[in-house]
Image (cartoon, rainbow, N blue to C red; front, side):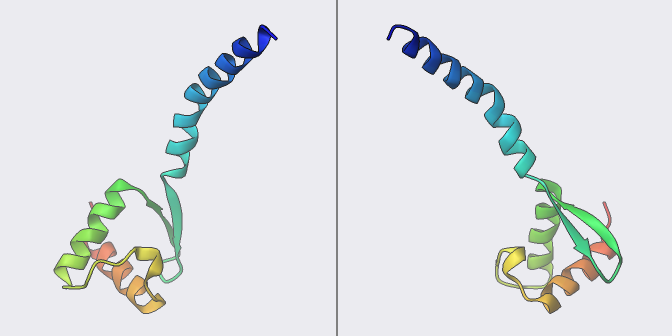
Length: 84
């Protein structure tokens, strides 16, 4: 029974080392823009542009992935004109 606490510590240490990599890997998604036939990384930079688009076009804040296809298309048109 003495090895159980040692094993549980090893699991906690392993999880502490692996978890940040797993979380950061999930933080970026790729989105395919069918009209322009290109991919965009949905990351912090893209979220900043998206929030700016909402303000510029006076739209209420809604998660991008909850928007309908017409609004998504409007965003990508705007985005291609506002490259970083």
